[in-house]
Image 1 (tube, rainbow over the protein chains, first blue to last red):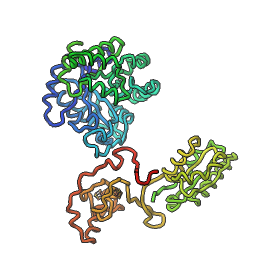
Image 2: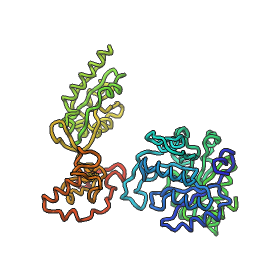
Image 3: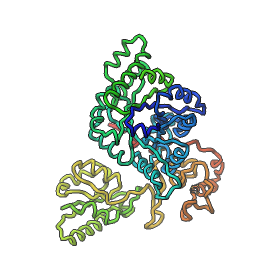
Image 4: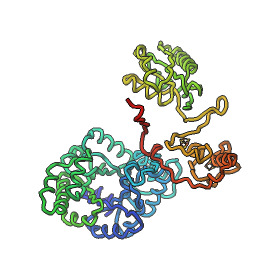
Length: 289
Length: 222
Ligand code: SF4
Ligand code: SF4
């Protein structure tokens, strides 16, 4: 069953983030994905996260798709203008990518090519509209295309992030939903309570909230996030738990597993597992779910 | 200088049509030189607006004032005492002046009366052309003082594209090819060897890549 059908049927869906390689050797990416493919519904392929140059999301998606794994390809407005974005969408559609996640993209100053000129010819909302247009058979210039893609489109939301107004966030979800976005991926969530207001007010038949469950890797990482990422709420109890645990890595895996269960119990229809380079740990998480 | 063009009067009317009073605020600097927002243009726009309101049968107080500079807080103080007589301001300064006026008077709506276009100069009376995009890291030394960032349609930094024809740019026969100009100029200067030197991939972080920019001179800060 394809991802869209699972969403339609209201099934609980597990996504796993799979970053493409920095280079042409995709073997690790493919083998990590293969190990968990029976338990993961689709792989989320980011488009040069944090503006770090690596294989494009389209390339990464292809590596998995040709092995029979479904992907959600992220597409970002930072690196391409409307011609290139639409061109790659057509390429993705023709190559069998069925799901697209649209983001604006972080500024190049975050990444490893900080002298690069960002493009931002169009933004998330406009790109969602462009996807809608392609699905209906027209490009952004209004010209008819031959064969339209049947994408399931989605985007991001700051739902569950600290210091954000729930009202504004819901309004933004609504705006993007009207532009065709069906699913919304959140930043890492460590306290399921924070997304409760969104679950209560979003109609999951129309808009699906996908909380990100980030695998912490160490006490240092947890503390760093706590201190330097004010938008992410990391409850002190989690930090203490890792601190007390004799096997910190195992504890982090356990925390991720518990978070998924707690979110599921709360009624979310999907989660995205993000392991940031520790994709070999994905199996430990998904096998316990 | 900063070159601006007058906004179509219909667009300005759309912004101000519901007001009971409005101040048309000009600037004595760039927009005066490019004849888009100086004292003369303030007078012309104010008259046009009065005429419009008269035709609508409405009594609207249209004020006129021109500051030495709108991009200077000191000069902006000049209207402190009479700005409250107006519901809003139509600023004929460049985008900088418009925003500075709004920042100085936070509760006053300020509308743009010009379209700010570029940094350039007059080629002849009534014709202005772009010369600099403020990339923040000037390379004119190696290009014979002709800016390829601004004047090449593709911002190419290492010679022309394949579309350069008879000295003209592929986008229009009315546009000079920047690289033709650069090569001609280097030839005149006897420095054609500069053309052979490869320009490194440009650091756009001094341009807009790093977000809105600031220049900070510690030696001048008090
Ligand atoms: S190189 Fe940059 S600073 Fe120099 S003229 Fe061109 S745009 Fe302006
Ligand atoms: S023809 Fe000349 S100015 Fe025009 S894009 Fe090519 S190199 Fe640049």
